[in-house]
Image 1: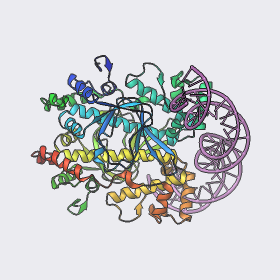
Image 2: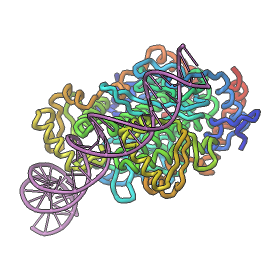
Image 3: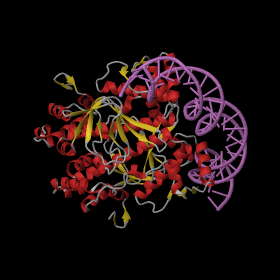
Image 4: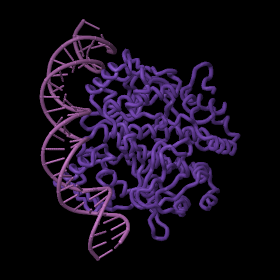
Length: 269
Length: 269
DNA sequence: CGATCTGTTGATATCCTTCAATTTTGGTGG
DNA sequence: CCACCAAAATTGAAGGATATCAACAGATCG
Protein backbone atom coordinates (compact mmCIF):
# COMPACT_ATOMS: atom_id res chain seq x y z
CA UNK A 1 0.00 0.00 0.00
CA UNK A 2 1.57 3.24 -1.18
CA UNK A 3 0.22 5.91 1.09
CA UNK A 4 3.05 8.36 1.05
CA UNK A 5 4.83 10.69 -1.32
CA UNK A 6 8.16 12.12 -0.29
CA UNK A 7 8.22 10.06 2.88
CA UNK A 8 5.27 11.71 4.62
CA UNK A 9 2.41 9.27 5.06
CA UNK A 10 -0.90 10.82 4.10
CA UNK A 11 -3.67 9.92 6.54
CA UNK A 12 -6.35 10.55 3.93
CA UNK A 13 -4.78 8.01 1.60
CA UNK A 14 -4.23 5.55 4.43
CA UNK A 15 -7.85 5.86 5.47
CA UNK A 16 -9.39 5.51 2.03
CA UNK A 17 -7.10 2.57 1.28
CA UNK A 18 -9.15 0.61 3.81
CA UNK A 19 -12.01 0.96 1.39
CA UNK A 20 -10.50 0.07 -1.97
CA UNK A 21 -7.22 -0.34 -3.78
CA UNK A 22 -6.42 3.14 -5.02
CA UNK A 23 -4.59 3.74 -8.29
CA UNK A 24 -1.52 5.95 -8.54
CA UNK A 25 -3.71 8.63 -10.09
CA UNK A 26 -6.15 8.38 -7.21
CA UNK A 27 -3.36 8.79 -4.70
CA UNK A 28 -1.84 11.74 -6.53
CA UNK A 29 -5.21 13.45 -6.63
CA UNK A 30 -5.75 12.88 -2.92
CA UNK A 31 -2.32 14.29 -2.18
CA UNK A 32 -3.09 17.32 -4.28
CA UNK A 33 -6.16 17.98 -2.14
CA UNK A 34 -3.99 18.48 0.92
CA UNK A 35 -1.42 20.76 -0.66
CA UNK A 36 -2.62 24.19 0.37
CA UNK A 37 -2.84 23.84 4.12
CA UNK A 38 -3.83 26.52 6.56
CA UNK A 39 -2.73 26.44 10.19
CA UNK A 40 -5.04 27.21 13.13
CA UNK A 41 -4.47 27.37 16.85
CA UNK A 42 -6.31 25.36 19.46
CA UNK A 43 -9.94 26.25 20.19
CA UNK A 44 -10.44 28.03 16.90
CA UNK A 45 -13.93 28.01 15.46
CA UNK A 46 -13.74 26.72 11.88
CA UNK A 47 -17.48 26.62 11.18
CA UNK A 48 -20.34 28.21 13.13
CA UNK A 49 -23.88 26.96 13.55
CA UNK A 50 -26.29 28.99 11.47
CA UNK A 51 -23.80 30.27 8.94
CA UNK A 52 -23.99 29.47 5.24
CA UNK A 53 -21.66 26.54 4.60
CA UNK A 54 -18.47 27.69 2.95
CA UNK A 55 -15.86 25.55 1.32
CA UNK A 56 -15.34 21.96 2.33
CA UNK A 57 -12.00 20.91 3.77
CA UNK A 58 -9.83 18.04 4.86
CA UNK A 59 -8.21 18.06 8.26
CA UNK A 60 -4.58 17.27 7.61
CA UNK A 61 -3.11 17.61 11.09
CA UNK A 62 -4.41 18.00 14.62
CA UNK A 63 -7.82 17.29 16.10
CA UNK A 64 -11.17 19.03 15.78
CA UNK A 65 -14.76 18.31 16.66
CA UNK A 66 -18.29 18.99 15.54
CA UNK A 67 -20.51 20.19 18.37
CA UNK A 68 -23.81 21.80 19.27
CA UNK A 69 -24.29 24.43 21.94
CA UNK A 70 -27.51 24.43 23.96
CA UNK A 71 -29.32 27.60 25.03
CA UNK A 72 -28.11 27.09 28.60
CA UNK A 73 -24.49 26.96 27.47
CA UNK A 74 -23.98 23.23 27.74
CA UNK A 75 -22.28 21.55 24.82
CA UNK A 76 -22.67 18.23 23.05
CA UNK A 77 -19.70 17.04 21.04
CA UNK A 78 -20.94 15.08 18.03
CA UNK A 79 -17.87 13.73 16.27
CA UNK A 80 -14.14 14.14 16.26
CA UNK A 81 -12.30 15.10 13.09
CA UNK A 82 -8.95 13.42 12.81
CA UNK A 83 -6.31 13.79 10.07
CA UNK A 84 -7.75 12.50 6.80
CA UNK A 85 -11.31 13.37 7.71
CA UNK A 86 -13.40 15.46 5.36
CA UNK A 87 -15.64 18.17 6.70
CA UNK A 88 -18.71 19.50 4.93
CA UNK A 89 -17.76 17.83 1.69
CA UNK A 90 -21.33 18.32 0.50
CA UNK A 91 -22.63 20.88 2.95
CA UNK A 92 -23.21 23.42 0.19
CA UNK A 93 -26.43 21.49 -0.41
CA UNK A 94 -27.75 22.98 2.81
CA UNK A 95 -28.74 26.54 3.51
CA UNK A 96 -27.25 26.75 6.99
CA UNK A 97 -24.95 24.76 9.24
CA UNK A 98 -26.83 22.95 12.00
CA UNK A 99 -23.72 22.60 14.19
CA UNK A 100 -20.31 24.14 14.70
CA UNK A 101 -16.77 22.88 14.22
CA UNK A 102 -13.78 23.86 16.32
CA UNK A 103 -10.19 22.80 16.62
CA UNK A 104 -9.16 21.15 19.87
CA UNK A 105 -5.41 21.36 19.38
CA UNK A 106 -3.42 23.36 16.82
CA UNK A 107 -4.48 21.92 13.46
CA UNK A 108 -4.09 22.25 9.74
CA UNK A 109 -6.85 22.12 7.19
CA UNK A 110 -6.86 22.21 3.39
CA UNK A 111 -9.85 23.79 1.68
CA UNK A 112 -11.53 21.94 -1.19
CA UNK A 113 -13.49 24.17 -3.58
CA UNK A 114 -16.96 23.04 -4.50
CA UNK A 115 -16.03 22.69 -8.17
CA UNK A 116 -13.33 20.26 -7.20
CA UNK A 117 -15.84 18.09 -5.36
CA UNK A 118 -18.22 18.16 -8.32
CA UNK A 119 -15.44 17.32 -10.74
CA UNK A 120 -14.44 14.29 -8.72
CA UNK A 121 -18.06 13.20 -8.41
CA UNK A 122 -18.53 13.51 -12.16
CA UNK A 123 -15.28 12.10 -13.46
CA UNK A 124 -13.62 9.92 -10.85
CA UNK A 125 -16.27 7.43 -9.81
CA UNK A 126 -13.95 5.33 -7.69
CA UNK A 127 -12.77 8.30 -5.66
CA UNK A 128 -16.34 9.53 -5.45
CA UNK A 129 -17.30 6.15 -4.03
CA UNK A 130 -14.38 6.29 -1.61
CA UNK A 131 -15.64 9.66 -0.36
CA UNK A 132 -19.14 8.20 -0.06
CA UNK A 133 -17.66 5.34 1.90
CA UNK A 134 -15.98 7.69 4.34
CA UNK A 135 -19.24 9.59 4.82
CA UNK A 136 -20.97 6.29 5.52
CA UNK A 137 -18.28 5.49 8.06
CA UNK A 138 -19.01 8.78 9.78
CA UNK A 139 -22.74 8.01 9.83
CA UNK A 140 -21.95 4.59 11.31
CA UNK A 141 -19.98 6.30 14.06
CA UNK A 142 -22.95 8.57 14.77
CA UNK A 143 -25.17 5.50 15.12
CA UNK A 144 -22.65 3.86 17.42
CA UNK A 145 -22.63 6.96 19.59
CA UNK A 146 -26.41 6.78 19.81
CA UNK A 147 -26.15 3.18 20.99
CA UNK A 148 -23.57 4.21 23.58
CA UNK A 149 -25.60 7.14 24.89
CA UNK A 150 -28.89 5.30 24.81
CA UNK A 151 -27.90 1.95 26.20
CA UNK A 152 -24.54 1.96 27.98
CA UNK A 153 -23.66 3.12 31.48
CA UNK A 154 -20.78 5.46 32.22
CA UNK A 155 -18.14 2.72 32.24
CA UNK A 156 -19.41 1.36 28.94
CA UNK A 157 -19.48 4.79 27.33
CA UNK A 158 -15.96 5.73 28.35
CA UNK A 159 -14.58 2.33 27.31
CA UNK A 160 -16.37 2.61 23.96
CA UNK A 161 -14.98 6.05 23.23
CA UNK A 162 -11.42 5.10 24.09
CA UNK A 163 -11.65 2.02 21.88
CA UNK A 164 -13.05 4.00 18.98
CA UNK A 165 -10.39 6.66 19.20
CA UNK A 166 -7.61 4.08 19.27
CA UNK A 167 -9.02 2.14 16.31
CA UNK A 168 -9.46 5.32 14.31
CA UNK A 169 -5.90 6.44 14.99
CA UNK A 170 -4.69 3.05 13.88
CA UNK A 171 -6.78 3.27 10.71
CA UNK A 172 -4.92 6.41 9.63
CA UNK A 173 -1.49 5.15 10.58
CA UNK A 174 -1.04 7.29 13.69
CA UNK A 175 -0.68 4.33 16.02
CA UNK A 176 0.65 0.83 15.69
CA UNK A 177 -0.26 -0.50 19.11
CA UNK A 178 -2.89 0.28 21.72
CA UNK A 179 -1.48 3.63 22.71
CA UNK A 180 -2.32 7.05 21.30
CA UNK A 181 -1.98 10.71 22.05
CA UNK A 182 -5.29 11.80 23.61
CA UNK A 183 -5.42 15.58 23.88
CA UNK A 184 -8.96 15.61 25.26
CA UNK A 185 -9.73 17.04 28.68
CA UNK A 186 -12.19 15.37 31.03
CA UNK A 187 -14.76 18.13 30.43
CA UNK A 188 -14.46 17.39 26.71
CA UNK A 189 -14.91 13.67 27.28
CA UNK A 190 -17.99 14.54 29.33
CA UNK A 191 -19.39 16.73 26.55
CA UNK A 192 -18.92 13.81 24.19
CA UNK A 193 -20.54 11.13 26.33
CA UNK A 194 -23.30 13.03 28.06
CA UNK A 195 -21.61 12.76 31.47
CA UNK A 196 -20.21 15.26 33.93
CA UNK A 197 -16.46 15.82 34.13
CA UNK A 198 -16.61 14.61 37.73
CA UNK A 199 -18.05 11.30 36.72
CA UNK A 200 -15.66 10.91 33.80
CA UNK A 201 -12.90 11.35 36.32
CA UNK A 202 -14.24 8.63 38.59
CA UNK A 203 -14.59 6.16 35.74
CA UNK A 204 -11.07 6.86 34.53
CA UNK A 205 -9.78 6.36 38.07
CA UNK A 206 -11.58 3.04 38.24
CA UNK A 207 -10.08 1.95 34.93
CA UNK A 208 -6.63 2.91 36.15
CA UNK A 209 -7.08 1.02 39.42
CA UNK A 210 -8.20 -2.02 37.43
CA UNK A 211 -5.12 -1.72 35.19
CA UNK A 212 -7.30 -1.34 32.12
CA UNK A 213 -5.72 1.90 30.96
CA UNK A 214 -2.89 4.26 31.67
CA UNK A 215 -3.40 7.92 30.97
CA UNK A 216 -1.18 10.81 31.79
CA UNK A 217 0.53 13.63 30.00
CA UNK A 218 -2.18 13.27 27.35
CA UNK A 219 -0.87 9.82 26.56
CA UNK A 220 -3.43 7.00 26.59
CA UNK A 221 -2.63 3.30 26.56
CA UNK A 222 -5.24 0.57 26.56
CA UNK A 223 -3.61 -2.06 28.78
CA UNK A 224 -6.38 -4.61 28.33
CA UNK A 225 -8.21 -3.96 25.11
CA UNK A 226 -10.15 -7.21 25.36
CA UNK A 227 -11.62 -6.32 28.73
CA UNK A 228 -12.36 -2.76 27.63
CA UNK A 229 -14.14 -3.94 24.51
CA UNK A 230 -16.16 -6.27 26.68
CA UNK A 231 -17.12 -3.46 29.07
CA UNK A 232 -18.10 -1.30 26.10
CA UNK A 233 -19.77 -4.03 24.08
CA UNK A 234 -17.41 -2.78 21.41
CA UNK A 235 -17.18 -4.37 17.99
CA UNK A 236 -15.06 -2.55 15.46
CA UNK A 237 -17.16 -3.84 12.56
CA UNK A 238 -19.04 -0.53 12.44
CA UNK A 239 -15.86 1.23 11.35
CA UNK A 240 -15.96 -0.81 8.13
CA UNK A 241 -12.22 -1.11 7.81
CA UNK A 242 -12.39 -4.41 5.95
CA UNK A 243 -12.83 -3.02 2.45
CA UNK A 244 -15.43 -4.02 -0.07
CA UNK A 245 -16.13 -7.49 -1.48
CA UNK A 246 -14.19 -8.41 -4.64
CA UNK A 247 -17.36 -8.37 -6.67
CA UNK A 248 -18.01 -4.76 -5.73
CA UNK A 249 -14.37 -3.88 -6.37
CA UNK A 250 -14.74 -5.18 -9.92
CA UNK A 251 -17.92 -3.18 -10.30
CA UNK A 252 -16.09 -0.02 -9.25
CA UNK A 253 -13.23 -0.80 -11.63
CA UNK A 254 -15.81 -1.01 -14.39
CA UNK A 255 -17.16 2.44 -13.57
CA UNK A 256 -13.64 3.77 -13.50
CA UNK A 257 -12.89 2.50 -17.00
CA UNK A 258 -16.08 4.04 -18.36
CA UNK A 259 -14.88 7.52 -17.50
CA UNK A 260 -11.18 7.26 -18.27
CA UNK A 261 -9.09 9.91 -19.96
CA UNK A 262 -9.87 12.91 -17.81
CA UNK A 263 -7.78 11.98 -14.83
CA UNK A 264 -4.86 14.27 -15.45
CA UNK A 265 -7.00 17.37 -15.67
CA UNK A 266 -8.28 16.78 -12.19
CA UNK A 267 -4.94 16.32 -10.55
CA UNK A 268 -3.87 19.86 -11.32
CA UNK A 269 -5.18 23.22 -10.25
CA UNK B 1 -45.01 21.86 -6.88
CA UNK B 2 -46.10 18.80 -8.84
CA UNK B 3 -45.59 15.86 -6.54
CA UNK B 4 -48.18 13.49 -7.85
CA UNK B 5 -49.01 11.49 -10.95
CA UNK B 6 -52.45 10.04 -11.32
CA UNK B 7 -53.67 11.71 -8.15
CA UNK B 8 -51.49 9.80 -5.70
CA UNK B 9 -49.01 12.09 -3.96
CA UNK B 10 -45.52 10.59 -3.89
CA UNK B 11 -43.79 11.17 -0.55
CA UNK B 12 -40.35 10.76 -2.14
CA UNK B 13 -41.08 13.57 -4.57
CA UNK B 14 -42.64 15.71 -1.85
CA UNK B 15 -39.58 15.22 0.34
CA UNK B 16 -36.96 15.93 -2.30
CA UNK B 17 -38.91 18.97 -3.47
CA UNK B 18 -37.89 20.60 -0.21
CA UNK B 19 -34.36 20.47 -1.51
CA UNK B 20 -34.64 21.76 -5.07
CA UNK B 21 -37.10 22.43 -7.83
CA UNK B 22 -37.35 19.12 -9.64
CA UNK B 23 -37.95 18.92 -13.39
CA UNK B 24 -40.68 16.81 -14.93
CA UNK B 25 -38.04 14.27 -15.89
CA UNK B 26 -36.75 14.16 -12.34
CA UNK B 27 -40.23 13.53 -11.02
CA UNK B 28 -40.96 10.84 -13.57
CA UNK B 29 -37.74 9.08 -12.69
CA UNK B 30 -38.51 9.23 -8.98
CA UNK B 31 -41.97 7.81 -9.64
CA UNK B 32 -40.47 5.00 -11.65
CA UNK B 33 -38.30 4.05 -8.68
CA UNK B 34 -41.39 3.27 -6.61
CA UNK B 35 -43.24 1.24 -9.23
CA UNK B 36 -42.40 -2.32 -8.24
CA UNK B 37 -43.47 -2.39 -4.61
CA UNK B 38 -43.33 -5.34 -2.30
CA UNK B 39 -45.62 -5.63 0.71
CA UNK B 40 -44.45 -6.77 4.16
CA UNK B 41 -46.27 -7.35 7.43
CA UNK B 42 -45.48 -5.64 10.72
CA UNK B 43 -42.30 -6.68 12.55
CA UNK B 44 -40.67 -8.11 9.46
CA UNK B 45 -36.90 -8.00 9.32
CA UNK B 46 -35.87 -6.32 6.07
CA UNK B 47 -32.11 -6.23 6.73
CA UNK B 48 -30.07 -8.07 9.36
CA UNK B 49 -26.92 -6.94 11.11
CA UNK B 50 -23.90 -8.80 9.78
CA UNK B 51 -25.34 -9.73 6.41
CA UNK B 52 -23.90 -8.53 3.13
CA UNK B 53 -25.92 -5.49 2.05
CA UNK B 54 -28.31 -6.40 -0.74
CA UNK B 55 -30.25 -4.06 -2.91
CA UNK B 56 -31.15 -0.57 -1.77
CA UNK B 57 -34.81 0.37 -1.47
CA UNK B 58 -37.29 3.16 -0.87
CA UNK B 59 -39.96 2.80 1.73
CA UNK B 60 -43.18 3.73 -0.05
CA UNK B 61 -45.75 3.04 2.66
CA UNK B 62 -45.74 2.24 6.36
CA UNK B 63 -43.07 2.70 8.99
CA UNK B 64 -39.78 0.92 9.66
CA UNK B 65 -36.71 1.48 11.80
CA UNK B 66 -32.99 0.87 11.89
CA UNK B 67 -31.87 -0.68 15.18
CA UNK B 68 -29.04 -2.43 16.97
CA UNK B 69 -29.47 -5.35 19.35
CA UNK B 70 -27.13 -5.64 22.34
CA UNK B 71 -25.76 -8.94 23.60
CA UNK B 72 -28.14 -8.79 26.58
CA UNK B 73 -31.14 -8.48 24.30
CA UNK B 74 -31.77 -4.77 24.76
CA UNK B 75 -32.40 -2.76 21.64
CA UNK B 76 -31.51 0.72 20.48
CA UNK B 77 -33.61 2.19 17.71
CA UNK B 78 -31.45 4.44 15.56
CA UNK B 79 -33.75 6.03 13.00
CA UNK B 80 -37.24 5.69 11.66
CA UNK B 81 -37.86 5.13 7.98
CA UNK B 82 -40.94 6.89 6.73
CA UNK B 83 -42.47 6.89 3.25
CA UNK B 84 -40.02 8.48 0.82
CA UNK B 85 -36.96 7.45 2.81
CA UNK B 86 -34.15 5.59 1.10
CA UNK B 87 -32.46 2.71 2.84
CA UNK B 88 -28.95 1.52 2.09
CA UNK B 89 -28.75 3.55 -1.06
CA UNK B 90 -24.96 3.13 -0.99
CA UNK B 91 -24.55 0.27 1.47
CA UNK B 92 -22.99 -1.94 -1.20
CA UNK B 93 -19.80 -0.03 -0.43
CA UNK B 94 -19.65 -1.90 2.86
CA UNK B 95 -18.91 -5.52 3.47
CA UNK B 96 -21.51 -6.10 6.17
CA UNK B 97 -24.47 -4.32 7.70
CA UNK B 98 -23.70 -2.84 11.11
CA UNK B 99 -27.36 -2.67 12.12
CA UNK B 100 -30.72 -4.20 11.24
CA UNK B 101 -33.90 -2.82 9.71
CA UNK B 102 -37.42 -3.97 10.53
CA UNK B 103 -40.91 -2.88 9.69
CA UNK B 104 -43.02 -1.57 12.56
CA UNK B 105 -46.36 -1.65 10.77
CA UNK B 106 -47.31 -3.31 7.48
CA UNK B 107 -45.19 -1.54 4.88
CA UNK B 108 -44.27 -1.45 1.24
CA UNK B 109 -40.80 -1.09 -0.18
CA UNK B 110 -39.48 -0.76 -3.72
CA UNK B 111 -36.04 -2.21 -4.46
CA UNK B 112 -33.51 -0.08 -6.36
CA UNK B 113 -30.81 -2.08 -8.16
CA UNK B 114 -27.26 -0.93 -7.70
CA UNK B 115 -26.88 -0.15 -11.41
CA UNK B 116 -29.80 2.20 -11.15
CA UNK B 117 -28.09 4.11 -8.34
CA UNK B 118 -24.84 4.32 -10.30
CA UNK B 119 -26.63 5.47 -13.42
CA UNK B 120 -28.33 8.28 -11.55
CA UNK B 121 -25.06 9.25 -9.89
CA UNK B 122 -23.32 9.37 -13.26
CA UNK B 123 -25.96 10.96 -15.46
CA UNK B 124 -28.44 12.86 -13.32
CA UNK B 125 -26.39 15.20 -11.18
CA UNK B 126 -29.33 17.10 -9.76
CA UNK B 127 -31.08 13.94 -8.61
CA UNK B 128 -27.79 12.62 -7.32
CA UNK B 129 -27.44 15.80 -5.30
CA UNK B 130 -31.00 15.44 -4.06
CA UNK B 131 -30.18 11.93 -2.83
CA UNK B 132 -27.04 13.28 -1.19
CA UNK B 133 -29.14 15.94 0.46
CA UNK B 134 -31.53 13.36 1.88
CA UNK B 135 -28.60 11.37 3.24
CA UNK B 136 -27.29 14.54 4.86
CA UNK B 137 -30.68 15.11 6.38
CA UNK B 138 -30.53 11.63 7.89
CA UNK B 139 -27.07 12.32 9.29
CA UNK B 140 -28.38 15.57 10.78
CA UNK B 141 -31.16 13.62 12.47
CA UNK B 142 -28.57 11.23 13.92
CA UNK B 143 -26.67 14.20 15.34
CA UNK B 144 -29.85 15.63 16.79
CA UNK B 145 -30.55 12.30 18.47
CA UNK B 146 -27.09 12.40 20.00
CA UNK B 147 -27.83 15.84 21.40
CA UNK B 148 -31.12 14.59 22.81
CA UNK B 149 -29.60 11.49 24.42
CA UNK B 150 -26.51 13.26 25.66
CA UNK B 151 -27.99 16.46 27.01
CA UNK B 152 -31.74 16.33 27.49
CA UNK B 153 -33.75 14.83 30.31
CA UNK B 154 -36.66 12.47 29.78
CA UNK B 155 -39.21 15.22 29.19
CA UNK B 156 -36.92 16.91 26.69
CA UNK B 157 -36.24 13.68 24.84
CA UNK B 158 -39.87 12.70 24.49
CA UNK B 159 -40.87 16.20 23.41
CA UNK B 160 -38.04 16.27 20.86
CA UNK B 161 -39.02 12.95 19.32
CA UNK B 162 -42.68 13.88 19.01
CA UNK B 163 -41.77 17.17 17.36
CA UNK B 164 -39.40 15.49 14.93
CA UNK B 165 -41.93 12.88 13.93
CA UNK B 166 -44.61 15.48 13.31
CA UNK B 167 -42.31 17.70 11.24
CA UNK B 168 -41.15 14.75 9.18
CA UNK B 169 -44.69 13.65 8.47
CA UNK B 170 -45.52 17.16 7.39
CA UNK B 171 -42.46 17.24 5.12
CA UNK B 172 -43.77 14.28 3.15
CA UNK B 173 -47.34 15.50 2.98
CA UNK B 174 -48.81 13.05 5.50
CA UNK B 175 -50.00 15.73 7.86
CA UNK B 176 -51.21 19.25 7.48
CA UNK B 177 -51.55 20.18 11.11
CA UNK B 178 -49.99 19.09 14.39
CA UNK B 179 -51.56 15.66 14.47
CA UNK B 180 -50.21 12.41 13.07
CA UNK B 181 -50.71 8.69 13.25
CA UNK B 182 -48.13 7.39 15.73
CA UNK B 183 -48.03 3.60 15.63
CA UNK B 184 -45.17 3.35 18.14
CA UNK B 185 -45.60 1.53 21.44
CA UNK B 186 -44.13 2.89 24.64
CA UNK B 187 -41.44 0.18 24.66
CA UNK B 188 -40.46 1.31 21.15
CA UNK B 189 -40.31 4.94 22.26
CA UNK B 190 -38.12 3.80 25.15
CA UNK B 191 -35.80 1.90 22.79
CA UNK B 192 -35.50 5.08 20.75
CA UNK B 193 -34.78 7.48 23.58
CA UNK B 194 -32.72 5.34 25.94
CA UNK B 195 -35.49 5.28 28.56
CA UNK B 196 -37.60 2.52 30.10
CA UNK B 197 -41.18 2.02 28.96
CA UNK B 198 -42.27 2.82 32.49
CA UNK B 199 -40.62 6.21 32.40
CA UNK B 200 -41.90 6.96 28.89
CA UNK B 201 -45.34 6.30 30.29
CA UNK B 202 -44.91 8.72 33.15
CA UNK B 203 -43.67 11.48 30.87
CA UNK B 204 -46.56 10.98 28.44
CA UNK B 205 -48.99 11.12 31.38
CA UNK B 206 -47.42 14.38 32.50
CA UNK B 207 -47.72 15.85 29.00
CA UNK B 208 -51.36 14.81 28.87
CA UNK B 209 -52.09 16.33 32.27
CA UNK B 210 -50.43 19.55 31.11
CA UNK B 211 -52.55 19.55 27.93
CA UNK B 212 -49.45 19.47 25.77
CA UNK B 213 -50.45 16.40 23.80
CA UNK B 214 -53.31 14.03 23.24
CA UNK B 215 -52.51 10.45 22.38
CA UNK B 216 -54.80 7.53 22.07
CA UNK B 217 -55.75 4.95 19.49
CA UNK B 218 -52.28 5.56 17.98
CA UNK B 219 -53.33 9.10 17.19
CA UNK B 220 -50.99 11.84 18.39
CA UNK B 221 -51.81 15.53 18.49
CA UNK B 222 -49.43 18.21 19.69
CA UNK B 223 -51.76 20.61 21.49
CA UNK B 224 -49.07 23.15 22.28
CA UNK B 225 -46.22 22.81 19.84
CA UNK B 226 -44.55 25.97 21.08
CA UNK B 227 -44.32 24.71 24.63
CA UNK B 228 -43.17 21.28 23.48
CA UNK B 229 -40.44 22.76 21.32
CA UNK B 230 -39.35 24.81 24.29
CA UNK B 231 -39.20 21.75 26.54
CA UNK B 232 -37.22 19.90 23.88
CA UNK B 233 -35.00 22.79 22.87
CA UNK B 234 -36.28 21.89 19.43
CA UNK B 235 -35.34 23.84 16.33
CA UNK B 236 -36.44 22.36 13.05
CA UNK B 237 -33.48 23.90 11.21
CA UNK B 238 -31.61 20.59 11.38
CA UNK B 239 -34.19 19.02 9.08
CA UNK B 240 -33.01 21.39 6.34
CA UNK B 241 -36.43 21.81 4.78
CA UNK B 242 -35.69 25.29 3.46
CA UNK B 243 -34.04 24.28 0.20
CA UNK B 244 -30.73 25.51 -1.16
CA UNK B 245 -29.66 29.09 -1.82
CA UNK B 246 -30.41 30.40 -5.33
CA UNK B 247 -26.75 30.53 -6.13
CA UNK B 248 -26.37 26.81 -5.45
CA UNK B 249 -29.56 26.09 -7.40
CA UNK B 250 -28.01 27.76 -10.43
CA UNK B 251 -24.83 25.77 -9.93
CA UNK B 252 -26.85 22.55 -9.91
CA UNK B 253 -28.73 23.63 -13.02
CA UNK B 254 -25.38 24.10 -14.71
CA UNK B 255 -24.30 20.58 -13.84
CA UNK B 256 -27.62 19.30 -15.13
CA UNK B 257 -27.14 20.94 -18.51
CA UNK B 258 -23.64 19.51 -18.83
CA UNK B 259 -24.98 15.98 -18.84
CA UNK B 260 -28.22 16.35 -20.79
CA UNK B 261 -29.54 13.91 -23.37
CA UNK B 262 -29.48 10.71 -21.39
CA UNK B 263 -32.49 11.33 -19.22
CA UNK B 264 -34.95 9.16 -21.06
CA UNK B 265 -32.78 6.08 -20.87
CA UNK B 266 -32.78 6.28 -17.11
CA UNK B 267 -36.51 6.60 -16.70
CA UNK B 268 -37.15 3.16 -18.13
CA UNK B 269 -36.27 -0.33 -16.99
C1' DC C 1 -61.32 -16.59 23.89
C1' DG C 2 -57.14 -17.42 26.01
C1' DA C 3 -52.55 -15.71 25.73
C1' DT C 4 -49.48 -12.20 25.13
C1' DC C 5 -48.27 -7.54 24.73
C1' DT C 6 -49.16 -2.83 26.12
C1' DG C 7 -50.36 0.64 29.36
C1' DT C 8 -50.55 2.12 34.08
C1' DT C 9 -49.33 2.90 38.91
C1' DG C 10 -46.65 2.41 43.33
C1' DA C 11 -42.50 1.39 46.09
C1' DT C 12 -37.69 0.98 46.30
C1' DA C 13 -32.97 1.03 44.46
C1' DT C 14 -29.11 3.02 42.00
C1' DC C 15 -26.39 5.56 39.02
C1' DC C 16 -25.06 9.83 38.10
C1' DT C 17 -25.37 14.81 39.18
C1' DT C 18 -24.63 18.67 41.93
C1' DC C 19 -22.10 21.28 45.11
C1' DA C 20 -17.92 22.26 47.30
C1' DA C 21 -13.15 22.28 48.35
C1' DT C 22 -8.32 21.23 47.27
C1' DT C 23 -4.48 19.98 44.45
C1' DT C 24 -2.22 19.82 40.10
C1' DT C 25 -1.28 21.25 35.53
C1' DG C 26 -0.42 24.29 31.83
C1' DG C 27 -0.12 28.63 29.71
C1' DT C 28 1.45 33.55 29.82
C1' DG C 29 3.72 37.73 30.87
C1' DG C 30 7.19 39.93 33.27
C1' DC D 1 13.09 31.22 34.05
C1' DC D 2 9.97 32.02 37.36
C1' DA D 3 5.54 33.77 39.18
C1' DC D 4 1.02 33.93 38.57
C1' DC D 5 -3.50 32.65 37.08
C1' DA D 6 -7.01 29.94 35.02
C1' DA D 7 -8.34 25.59 33.80
C1' DA D 8 -8.16 20.74 34.73
C1' DA D 9 -7.97 16.92 37.81
C1' DT D 10 -9.34 14.95 42.03
C1' DT D 11 -12.03 13.66 46.12
C1' DG D 12 -16.06 13.71 49.39
C1' DA D 13 -20.93 14.26 50.61
C1' DA D 14 -25.67 14.77 49.48
C1' DG D 15 -29.53 14.96 46.26
C1' DG D 16 -32.32 13.76 42.27
C1' DA D 17 -33.72 11.59 37.99
C1' DT D 18 -34.47 7.41 36.15
C1' DA D 19 -34.25 2.28 36.63
C1' DT D 20 -35.93 -1.75 38.62
C1' DC D 21 -39.35 -4.67 40.59
C1' DA D 22 -44.02 -5.85 41.07
C1' DA D 23 -48.80 -6.07 40.26
C1' DC D 24 -52.83 -5.49 37.57
C1' DA D 25 -55.96 -3.68 33.93
C1' DG D 26 -56.86 -3.17 29.18
C1' DA D 27 -56.01 -4.08 24.41
C1' DT D 28 -54.85 -6.98 20.58
C1' DC D 29 -54.19 -11.02 18.01
C1' DG D 30 -54.12 -15.61 16.45
